[in-house]
Amino acid sequence: MEKQVPSFVDKVVTWFDTHAQAKLEEGHANQEKWIFPFPFVLMSVSTLAAFYVGFNWVAVSVAVFLYVVRMFGITGVYHRYFSHKTYKTSRWFQFVLALLGNSAAERGPLWWAAHHRHHHRFSDTPEDTHSPSQKGFWDAHMLWWSRRKNVATRLDLVPDLAKYPELMFLDRFDSLVPLTLGGLMIALGSFLHHFYPALGTSGFQMFIWGFVVSTTVLFHGVATINSLSHVFGTRRFQTTDTSRNNWFLAIITLGEGWHNNHHHYCNSTRQGFFWWEIDITYYGLKMLEKLGLIWDLKPVPKRLLQPTGAKDIVRPHEVVPEPAFAKTRIAGVAGLLPGMTSALATQVPARSPDVPNP
Image 1 (cartoon, rainbow, N blue to C red):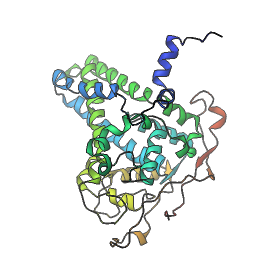
Image 2: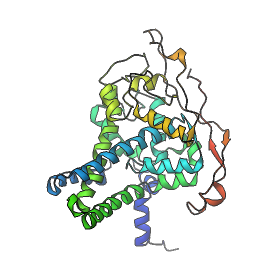
Image 3: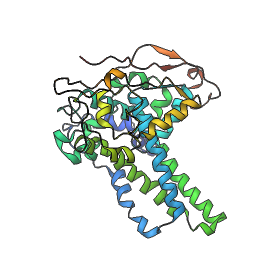
Image 4: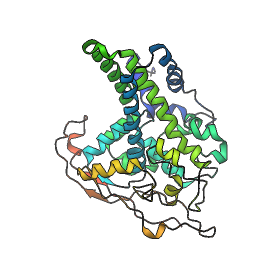
């Protein structure tokens, strides 16, 4: 039987389908080899266009706003919700949060959570995918994700998330939301240029500042937690890795810089354990709790707030998804994606138990 040649549409869909791309890469003999990250390189080089389009307060303000909002999407959603399940929410808002996190252009929610759970399980050991103590600063900061072995989403590590078709869709086609955001930036700049010319911005300028520059700076801001927060800072708790607390990184990442706290007890919603440790992500999550959009934020047990001695080494907690699920009610989200209608009024996974590793 003659093998069917994929059509142009099939090839385009496959290019956007990260799960299909992972299938192509998994058979490669050298899984440690890097794949040239063309979209990332193009994005980085395109930041130079900021000198061409010039500085504009409106465009730069939008860039800063999108940096903060999407940083929250990574820290408060991809990290503290999808990776660690430190609070609960409804299924429709879970999808809204996933869209926010996906807009940061840091792959899909399942891919991100799976790799992060793996990181906590093997932090700073040879099995860790991004440890500066194992493979150096640049590998931990930005090269690790382009290795062939890290392209695929480890669905075995996120069974609690993989059961949701809407999350699987976002994970497979993780570039659709960022590309849509880029298009919206062009539309916004063009709208302002046409109706409010006195503001002095344009579609191309808004795209460069609001999407390209903001996304690139956002990526490196998040990446500092993998690299710098395992090198510079203080260690209140004697964890089995090199995680450190760094107040400057906590500011630029909205609270993620309290990394030693987090590796001491990763099941807490709050990473700034004490009032003087600024944790903007946590403040934002508390606001969502007040609005009734999320609930059951996990606190830090008081017994874990005392600094540990050299002999009291505590291994970081792993996130092991529970088979049990908490019922939740959904309203007004039918038809969100094809095939989802009958599944929407179902369940949201319960949080993991506060049981330390042996």
